[in-house]
Image (cartoon, rainbow, N blue to C red):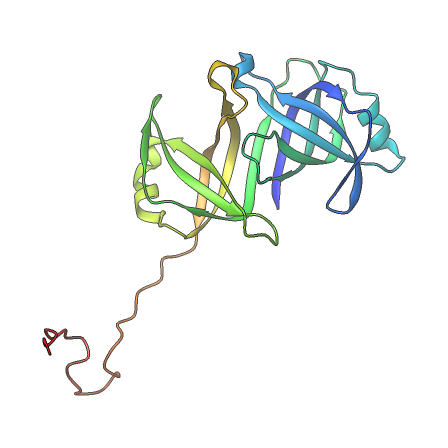
Length: 219
């Protein structure tokens, strides 16, 4: 599961509920605000369509008003689409200058092993996850301060699982629908690197030749 807590601004409510993963949801388009429209993180919020205080607060949410939500990020197979967030809690009574953007990705992400230099003392690696019960892989970048470059070099291996904590960042060049999407990590963790066992001769044996490669005869 991928957790998010963020202050988001409502752009518009959808008029009709949708069925997503077998559950009926009311939806809304919203953003995690930024200094410019090209830097906003676009979200599609899904609120369980069952009458109660949460649904009431969701429907009463006014456009452009900032609200604190928590929930779960669901990655889709379309990298151009806004990220889906299944809303768990809503807190509308907050000052309108409050900014929160905290994410913990607990999915079985796996990293690439190519570390790219970014501006503003950041480095980045590509990370991906296979969607729940699916063969589809979603990719984004994990950015972190260059002070953690050694940790990246020591820990990141292609295909190794990784968990990430940080905040979401998106950028759209010339208002493109296809964003550069990144998680700016303040920390990440990986499993311990396993020692590669030597294969060949059985242990406690004087057998020889198992690890040697002889030339291939040309018959």
